[in-house]
Length: 169
Image 1 (cartoon, rainbow, N blue to C red):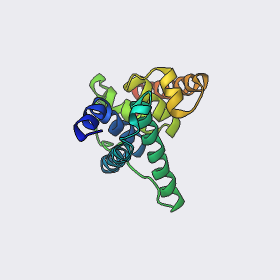
Image 2 (tube, rainbow, N blue to C red; image 1 turned 90 degrees about the vertical axis):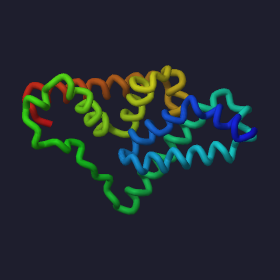
Image 3 (tube, rainbow, N blue to C red; image 1 turned 135 degrees about the vertical axis):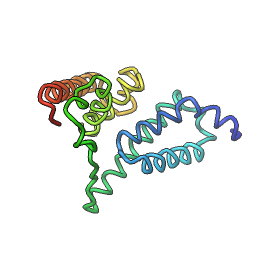
């Protein structure tokens, strides 16, 4: 496979790799590194990629595994993954409850979900993957995915109601 063929093959889903990595790793720099790492791994497999039914599914699986490995290695070395989900604490109550701010709040809530729920929300609700594809990538059955998705959505809904009712987060 030549470089142009490879680029044409990965271009349709390259941004998805980054977005999934960003969702899991939080840091843009780490997500860029993860994306680069996955693309290098795919390039190294370029001669056998045509044997895969879905190169995109392979790429998403590689991204998930790489990111989870990164998170595990950070925990193992007792480096806490710390980021402030609510950077604008000084913003007024009115600003926080405005509809235009809702997407930012949802993003922040998603970032607090357990890794598996975060990934499922990203793949299903944001990237629009089918349940069957998510099941293959995450090596889970579809029922477990639906349950995790339902729980994640419920958490988001409850947090949004609490935030909008009381202006706290």
